[in-house]
Length: 284
Image (cartoon, rainbow, N blue to C red; front, side, top):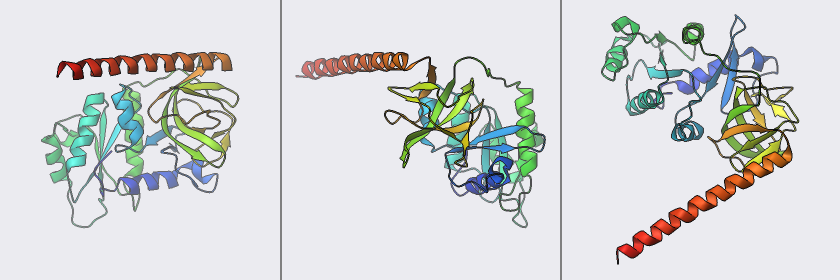
């Protein structure tokens, strides 16, 4: 997360290029809103580009915490800006821990002190200033500090003891949705279970029997495990970014769930319309 022009895209591009998963397939040919990076240790980190990202804002509205850690990108030569403050508010309201990436440190004659001081005035107290938030200088152009940033993310996840259940029915979130030459697709992050082709999933008022799963490089994969960003195809209707994905045991159950949700939505809409009519009449 971070202000526009603070180097967030450059950092994300460097991370994508560094991904072993991507390089095995000749580089990333498509961008599906989220991607995984393999660490030298074998650990995997999934990055989601936010905010301004429709799904992130929608998931926040729905009370869902899809991000475990926020990497707050602040340019060393520009410091805290309006979108930086907005990103801090997003993280605080979601109660998500923050790591600060001070970008563009490859520029000559710069110092990170101003950034750290400005962040303190917005309750972001980095370690150098007596706080507990890590601040790491990075450059998306040269790669300086990027490995340290990745290691900081892994370390914090260990300290916070992040765990998830890889058994049971699949649960996840729609990150984004679109229509491609092979039909309606949705990018999802899996938060529980393991998704495989042939599985049936429901999102809001639509469902899919998964035909093909594709990773961020557009390559078909046999399964999507915890924290994996994956493209799911074969949706009956276009799912909505920010909606929850749940696995159904069969097609009939999926259809029953969707019908119940549609009826509930109609009832709610009817109630809202009735209240609006009554309110309008009361003003006359």
